[in-house]
Length: 319
Length: 302
Image (cartoon, rainbow over all chains, first blue to last red; front, top):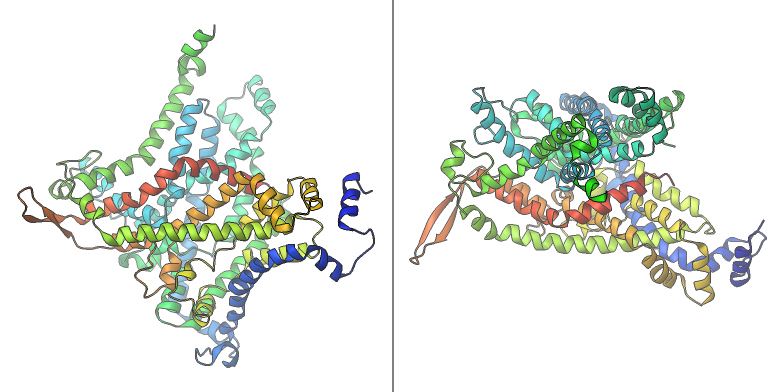
């Protein structure tokens, strides 16, 4: 069984064929464990210790008493949080933004990847990719700044063009419904190029003989895309859809924070902003922890459910 | 024969339909992704009157440089820039060191407890304590309002460690073994053999870390409530973009007197945005090359 290479190593390292105790491995690999010590400690402190703080969600937390000494209150904090009208609004806003982005954003990188794969002039392909990847590397603040500048009333490019065409100005940023679309469509601008990479990679992996055969059979471009390209990248699409569905209730802090403004709070206040404003802004640690925990638990459950559904449908899951 | 080939125009090579399709896509993308920046450049260089009357599209109207002089004289922005460069360098260095020191032992199949340690790390990718418990932890260990709160909490990246681990696993074991026979210790094996062999992967990871730290700002909002000297560039920009009033610039005249110049907030915001875009544009060729590679490594299941 043992290869020649391994038997040399055994001589040099005093590897034995028999099972050894823990002390043997510690003695042999102590330097490797030493290397791991710092990452393990950091993860313990910054990832696992805060999990202990989740207990706050089930306690009448008092900063002076600390987490452990504060009295247990069962699910009172959850009942309080779920009864708040602001909580249901925040939950609704998060779902609306994520669903809208699922419908509008999700197909875009797939379409771009297909368009790019249909292009033959490598110079044009490179220019298209270079310009469309750029927004991915710009910070949310920059993208938000650009969007606010372009959508501004009177001095913004879009409204200038609308007025030039004899149309009325559109309140892209101040009307709640318009704001939602501005938010999601600017997300397409930000992410479409980068999001297409994974699909381009999938399309590149398709056996070219399939396309050649289709051309010989007289299939036109759309038929080739529909019958070869799309079915071949189906598993990638499903995988991305699982990830997206799994995070349907989660939303980052940066984008909503940068894009929201006081006129659209009714639709722009999402879970992450709520946790920040209530938890850190108003110092209501209990409420902030409860809502944060709600988001991460529902998120984890969603991933499990969608993964199970996709496996039941015969697709490859996440694991 | 070769000359004839080279002289072929695209439409001769691919046909008219294909060429029109590709040129249409090209023009659409340039309009979508380049023209916003041209508009911002024009706004930053145009006069207040032209901006307010809506005359500025894709070239400066009534050229002026006062906005840019005001931006470059703004010490807040310049201090933020130097601070962010220092922060990004520190963070990237520590982050690289940590992923290497975790990825190397975990890439060795002979390491006892490897699966358990991997599970310990990977669990944190799916579940965490959340903002408030983290905040309370930083309060209790006196990390709030310090420089290190921007570095330590996120400096060990499990995802990037897994990428590097996959890369290390493809380095033949024989190298490690022969080095050990020559009397090298584990640290020497990592830094003298594995590090030079994985420079492209490390460059990719370094860029991942650097861009993440460069563009991040929410931790500064959460955990640095009172430190105005530790403001990442993006947060500095965010604060300036919330400006609701025009500013003034004291501009020296040729005759030695000074004159107040009004800087329109639209023009100033445009210039501030461009100021923070420039550093990214400067490194963009490298970013693009290594990042695309990194996405490919990451998408390979290991």
